[in-house]
Length: 98
Length: 255
Image (cartoon, rainbow over all chains, first blue to last red):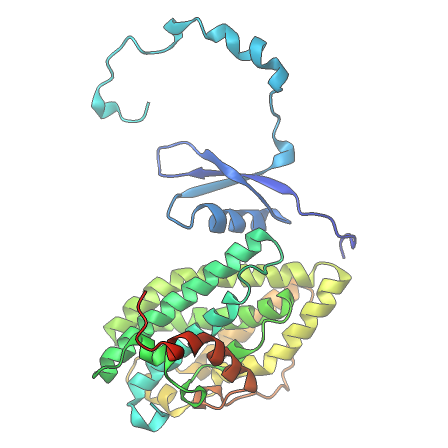
């Protein structure tokens, strides 16, 4: 017998791979009591219109997020470094997803 | 459309359709009332799968009957006495444990039934079953996991789901009662001999009940039967009243 007190189900983050070869992309979040239920719920909530071929679920509490206050030191320095973008090359159409 | 006015094959297809429709209609009652949003979506999806399955069977039955029979006339303009669904699918939703125990027994049977129907002599039944088997595999996992979660959950959830599991068991035994249309369908290699599905069903049910720490099945239980012969509970009339009222009030209504 597990804990008898009623507490809200934990929150999970859902990542869906829309087709093979693409990366899993964050789709949203949901509540579930355990990992099997989280996968099933994710299937029902986020893939009912054939959006996916694979699902990852992760406890939201396991996600380490950057702080909005650190936005400047983290991201601003790259704004003036355009040479880091591969925009000076012509990418052949056959390459596909880059 | 009483049993004796259409052939056995049509009766058999109607029987398959009626199970899916009545349970689909029952589950739709959860829409907007699920314990949480995610479960609301899940159970409504299952409801829609079943109603979609019912439509395919009714369309086939309508073709077999011919004339101006349509899937709608079969769903909305037959009386309770003319429905051949199992009694279990018309049982009330009750609490989540009641709904899940009804679903678990049905899904487990439905899975084995469809598995057999994918090898039917009848091409149309084979096609319908092949598609439905994928959906039902998911339904069966979903409801079995819930039985385990509730059984091996809290003291309260265990007590309540045990009551539902015990209550629905005699209804589930109707799955293995053979009617004339079952016999004929089996003789024509359309569908399974339902009696032969019983061992597999019992084995799977036992396995899940055991993991769920629930009591073993009562092997002395006697089947509650009648549904497959059109003899239903009072509940059935209420389901039809709600489901059929719009179609009967406005028979020529179009979307």
